[in-house]
Structure formats: C-alpha cells, structure tokens
Amino acid sequence: MIEKLKLAVFAIAILAANVAFFHFALPDTVFGRLASWVISAFEKDAPADEKPLNLTFSCKHPLPEFTLGPYSNPSEKELDTLCQCIWQELPAPAKDFAKAISDGSISSPSDATFGAFTANFSLAIRRCDGMNT
Image (cartoon, rainbow, N blue to C red; front, side, top):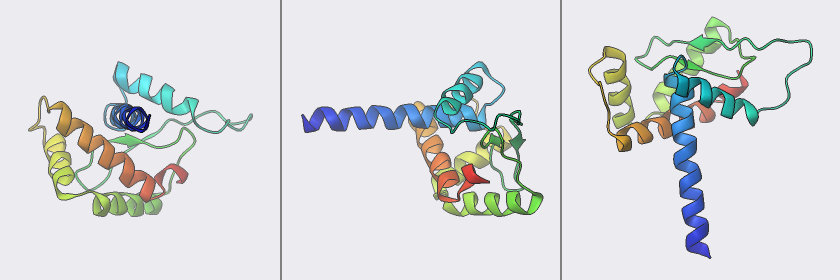
C-alpha cells in the first residue's frame, strides 16, 4: 500500500512539473495554454468584476518568460525582487539550463533535464511567493 502511495505521489509530482514548465516557459504553445487551463482549475474563484490579465513576465536574469496568476500584475520593483529571489533559489544546474534556454543553445532537452528544471523553477516561484504577487 505504501509503495502504491509513493508511486502516486511521484506521478503527481512529475505531472505538476511538466504542467508548470509548459505554463511558465512555453505559454504561447498548445501545451502552454493547456497547462494554464489546468492551473486555473485549481486557483481561487476570480473576482466577479475583474477580467483575467494573463500577463507574461521577463527578468533581467536569463530566465524563461513566465506567467503568474491570471490577475497578477506586479510593479517593476516587485518583479525585480521576484526575479532576484527566483534566481537565488535555483540550483546551479537549473541556472545553466535557464541560460541555455535564454541564449537558444538548447533545441531539444532530455525529459529528465526538462522535468528537473520545471520542478526547480516552479518551486522557486512558490518559495518566492510569486503566485501572490
């Protein structure tokens, strides 16, 4: 029973990492839009009088363009603080991968590298309280 539970948790973690990557790094692809839909299904109900902004954000650090919550619109100072925090939270291999994405030197990353980066990137955003920005 414990082994089945561990397997289920692992499968959910892999799925979450892939959803996070497509949502944050590839928002204008079919997979990115699907990931946005999956994420929005788990978010709080939106205020009735507000339409989602669905903005994308870029950092001075070599991070891929990403989105936050559909109503997120951080100030320039808040975004700079968030970007700095995300960069500091990423381990060295994830930073190297982010640099390679930014300079276009990676054309087809392995599934393991891809999954590891997305898990680290989404964890960094959560640790930096990015979803509440």
